[in-house]
Length: 62
Image (tube, rainbow, N blue to C red; front, side, top):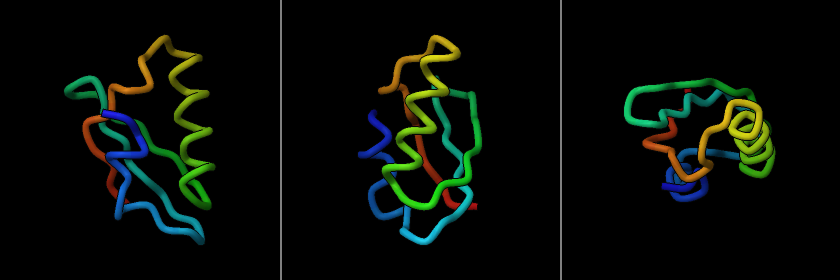
């Protein structure tokens, strides 16, 4: 699924650390102020590593 769909109700403005599970078993972590910043981190990460941006399994706030 897309990051925006997985992050609904999880990502809050004001900053936080988020785990993103993707590709049925991989996970990465980002610090972001809000959803647009988290999306930017995710898109850059996917571009650098050759992942599809719609491969998100879950998003959780740490």
